[in-house]
Image (cartoon, rainbow, N blue to C red; front, side, top):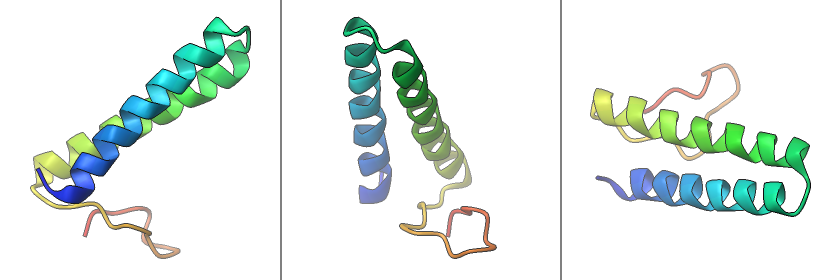
Length: 68
């Protein structure tokens, strides 16, 4: 696993922790947004893993967030 992929995994874990915390504190709408980003980070990492590529740190406009 590359450093970028590790960062995405950690970001997904932190996002899930935040979603759980927000839900527990009575903010379900904000928890849903955090949960969405958890799935986004996890999915992006899996796609990059399956393509054996690393994610681009900041995709340029028009590239659609491709792995580079």
